[in-house]
Image (cartoon, rainbow, N blue to C red; front, side, top):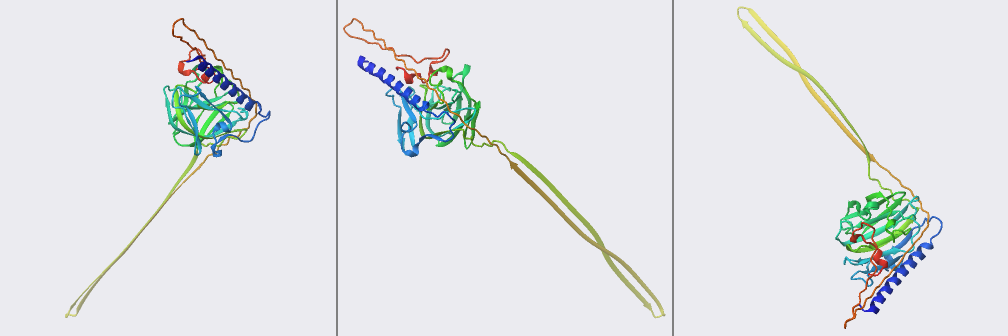
Length: 368
């Protein structure tokens, strides 16, 4: 690569990093010092613009990307990062403070048109929500599954998951309260403990962070993104996963049988002789029988089911953001008729024991 092109690439990286730092810093530093109670809409496609024209900062790696792109598509933004070496996504710049003790709700509309991954621990589209003390959750979306990234010894490895069809445009609700998160879409999809990813460094050591996009070179996706809002201090939706049923069964049977028999038989015989002798015989027999049968059966069954669960939460605000950019270049010429230059870029930092596929986000702010 010619020297001036390489220098321009390094400059682009540094400028991009500086812009991101200023954008995040300006957005988060101006947050009010008291708990917010109103809904903060960071993106609404109904306005007919892209997320970076509203409450998000859009960034890609590399710059320019191999093929990653965003474009407004009727009623949503179409984000495409199907080339595995592309990373692209949105950082919120004006989100309010998220205080776990008071609770917070993030509502978003998303459709995964296509997703591909070369590792079971990576997703082509991810949502990260961190509180003011940097506790939070990262959720990965596949076409048929949603799952959580783990922390600690299993940092950035697949944890709890749930089968779910993400291929249609759906509205999701993610709630954070105390040490637990819950994701629902009509009904509960996934729930678990909040994680602490801050040991990895930027951007997981950023308070009140919200990110939506592709943050890995081991996966890619094509999505439609239509809406995202934050509601600190707003009660999460009521979810009723169980029901209590009461059943009463009553059967009453009554049978009455009455039998009466009546029979009548009469016979008469008469004989007469001229000898003036008369003989008369009379026989009478009477019998009566009557039969009546009546049966009545009654059966009644009644079932009643009732279930109610209510969850209430409120939120307080603080925010801090830190971003560091480093670029290194080494060039060695040789004493031959043809000049050769070798550029050694800054390599994304990995946590000891991490596999190369676990390098995340750092390429956003370093040289390629």
